[in-house]
Image 1 (cartoon, one colour):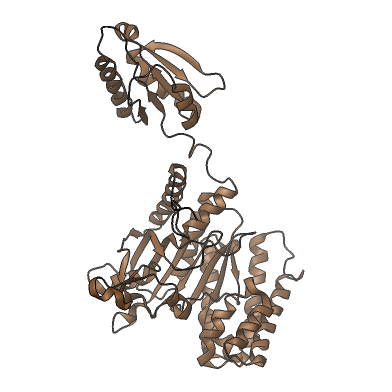
Image 2 (cartoon, one colour; image 1 turned 90 degrees about the horizontal axis):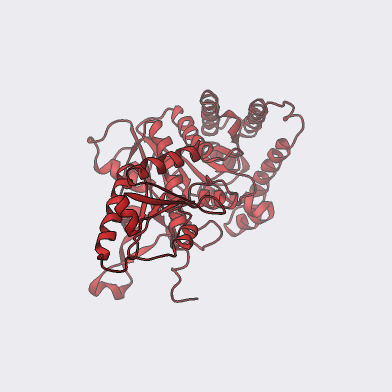
Length: 474
């Protein structure tokens, strides 16, 4: 590996990369704020006890720990850690500022997190999350609103074919109990079940065995999911051309199968009732066609207590985001539980997919500036400082009009064609000494294969460039 490469799972962001990221973040931020959410930021480093025990056994192993400084460094002990996600820091903030924050708390947070994971396609050790959460209410309207906000953000970015998978932890509890899996093995079963779409039945069955789950119970559970899959592909479900009607019928059929399997399981039945409410409220939000009840969705994080959600797009391993209800997490920092629910969009995967599928606006990274103001290299008696001063003044006027202006940093007599073409700058100016005396500027238009230049009055440069750019955008 080259000594100049960043650490594995970390990346440098060149100008075009930064523009893409800022574009996606800007769209997501705008959508979140239109839904009434307010911004929050927390430190990159948390006390290690804040993070440990919140993410399950696998999550704990992926926390980047920071060794104690000074004489304690050799011991390998850690007292701090890099932020693993944005949800636990939110819970800490709510607990710390209890009574000083409005109720309910509606916040969004867009910041990097770190995980000591194995890097892969679309998977990094440092990445951004775009979280939106509501704290303080039990209402199922919240789940529907979060799905609507996340779905609208993706739609605004150009995604047209995505699915919001929906399940409920209480439904999973009912399924596991009825299949015969002992309560002390529920967490182990959910960790394995969360990989069903990646490993398939045989892979999950093998992991069940490794985690000490009885074979008959595991088979009972996996057989139920096979029947759900068969139902999904049944022609009797998808009979209408209206996708909303099709999805409603399918979701209704899935809920019916859940009721049959769970029967009189009180907790599981309560979860099914909440799923029905979420679907009803989601339909009112206009996103019924995107939501798919998926009883196999588990999501590995152990702090989820109710509805869980995940967004998927075709031909992409993994998800673009997910979330759920975590009514007990804040209670880990307080002596009382506070209801909460959140959704997180994965910025990195969104950018990877949008780049590969050419979903970014063509003009997004087209240029670093609207115009280059050159400095003419003087010869003869007139000092070069006059040319520099004149070009600086023109650049200042152009910037004052709202244009992005690149200024030549030293006097030259050429090389501007290659410079502007490489950076896709649409215009550049040239002011020779004799032109300066006449109050004249040469404006070169680089937007065509064959550059066009015209001589215009110095006072008309700003207006001319603005008019040309406005005509181009229309």
